[in-house]
Image (cartoon, rainbow over all chains, first blue to last red):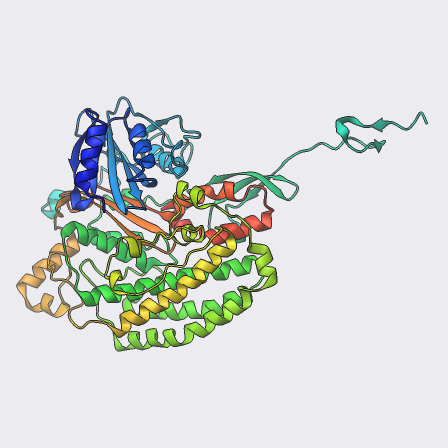
Length: 166
Length: 409
């Protein structure tokens, strides 16, 4: 059985200086890295003879409009089917530079996950074979999961939180 | 001899006074609304005669922005979004979401509720696989097997109806347990199903499993190696058909799955026949689990002690002040969840159904992402149907069990 501590120490040693913020919310090892390190890190964990974290569960994005310089996060969930060990890797990006290298060379499944993340957050995956919208229409000129697009009409007066004591 | 003009270029057979044939690919639109695609998605196929050269998929026709809508809703209202994803097995989605929230809140669900959930989830798995295998039969030209199975799916839906009042979009269970206990009618219906379903399944298997036509149509059609399947993010029966024994129920047991004894069927070649057989065997294993859960159903409460999330009984709401307050707060979504970040996965009908929930301490999720198995493995479809005929491509699609609601979310 792999422990979070063991893997975290190994990663911290191997990628010294470019990985940070090791946490384990609800038991899942979470770490943050940079856009330069993300692909080498994923490739290293995939090819590691013991860890074999070689299954890409999910890629998604998060928008934090308030945190200046780190407005967007790209979150990778990876899983070792041999050791039954999951890891979550985050990369934070500033809103002016949303480029991140693609993981499609490592995982075929990254293709649509990255297209979805591009579609909803506008993250640009460099080197992606076909970075186009996937669920929304091509003509759409904004990225709807960003927080600046509220779900409901902002001019509505009957649903103000103050009226409900919130 | 002068009027005869021999054309003999490119090493082809010389033809006399005939225009040269031009090799040209045909573009064929399969979908978006086509009865054989079982859902709204489009495939633009390049055909050479009847062989598929390449395909391009267009999806998103029923995208309903569930992830965005979820950012405005209190947790209990998100359940109704989840059962519109894989509508062939909606209870699994419902309970998967409830378990995610319970993980975030740290609620321990009583054993009885967990067992009832297992029974309902396995019934849902059976109904999902019944449809998938039945439709595969229809697509190969055999309609009768599908009709036998539909009768049994109807009985499963009657159990749903008894448990929660709905049939397709179930909204079953509550955060913290079940909405109500298993009634005697429900138990009677499940027991009747346990008795009658094996005969129907056996009849269906007799029709298909060793049927020469069916085997010719499915064996070695759309095979995928374990390596490619893993690279494409396959999970669930489709991955197991390729020979990888990954099942979330065994690897990360939830809702007391560790208490039950069942086998994980695994295929070899990952072709359409293996996917069919794996689903067929999984139904038998689900029946085993239901039988064990029903026989060992623990006594006790069917909901957790979580007054801030589990609606109080109606008679208390009318007579007790505290219950009334909680009722109001829950219904109005006034209760703030703790800050946290959770990933929880359940074994859905099609594979690992994951919920990635980020709470910032508000009444609604800050971000909710669904890991939808169909969405992830459907991208392998062009590779799987390269070089096959269009009729085989239809078979491959139905054996993958792509559900449009789950694909588009």
